[in-house]
Length: 327
Ligand SMILES: Cc1cc2nc3c(=O)[nH]c(=O)nc-3n(C[C@H](O)[C@H](O)[C@H](O)COP(=O)(O)OP(=O)(O)OC[C@H]3O[C@@H](n4cnc5c(N)ncnc54)[C@H](O)[C@@H]3O)c2cc1C
Ligand code: SF4
Image 1 (cartoon, helix red, strand yellow):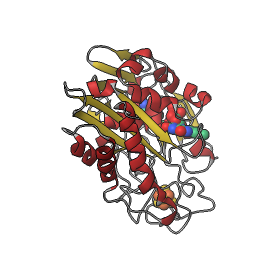
Image 2: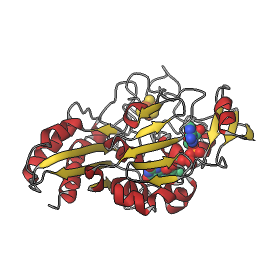
Image 3: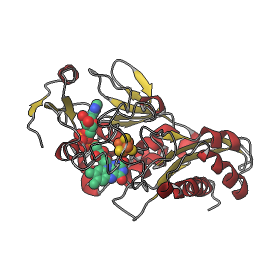
């Protein structure tokens, strides 16, 4: 790991100013930043500690919705009864992520900005070719082992998948990020890796995530996050789905439905085609299974990850039937 200088930000403004310097990175829980520094993917000149800044760890739930500060710990949000009542999909996405120890350290802002788990990306010494680390150098994953790679939003430049869980639930429920000077829907915050894999979000130097806001919705209250992975804990998603459902007054016709996918795409992936196909339909297993296949429109696989094209619609189907009371 290369030497870097460390400083504690005295204020929010100081932290934002500091990010304008080349090679400067913010430190929140440190669980991603230090990992990436150790394996040589990130080589910061300066690390600016923001973990102690006051007022950024609040979690508020009221009649409008949920507001979560960027420095709120994953465990604090996962354990918050108000969040669980208003949006169980967010609670579940956090409870199923990482480990208890990591959730106690890691923050909401840092969680959103975690980087792909592509093995080639994380091993620069063995695999110098990686367009995400070094634009124009090629992609070591294509032609290699691609079991954990994405099938949606990819290109011949990069097939890495976005690994986080919470962002999937946030995208499904139209969460908005507070960047201080502007508010950005989480869905627009993330960029698809396709054309410029090195650019993952719209965050600019001088900006930082201050918090996230979610409006209360009936579909949010009836929501879930289903994560399928190689082992039951401490593992990233092979495929996951955040879904929410609201019925018409008849209790069986779908009035509002939210579907977003994780583990299969280059960014948190809203499956609008599935939503459009199901609004106004009576909830039935066959209808849902048929619509769920639309989530894979445009999917491209590289042999090892072909299974995701079959798995993801099944995950979506099961999640919808679960919140609909049919599973
Ligand atoms: C072994 C392991 C397993 C994991 N499993 C999962 C999993 O199953 N699911 C899952 O979702 N995640 C998983 N994670 C990822 C984990 O959730 C993240 O490491 C964590 O959430 C990052 O938060 P942090 O506060 O530690 O971020 P840090 O490491 O402090 O920061 C991460 C990045 O975000 C930037 N940053 C931090 N805060 C801000 C801010 N407010 N504004 C702007 N930039 C900011 C930093 O500069 C850095 O670039 C796993 C991690 C590990 C190590
Ligand atoms: S898939 Fe993306 S992150 Fe992985 S090696 Fe290829 S370019 Fe790098």
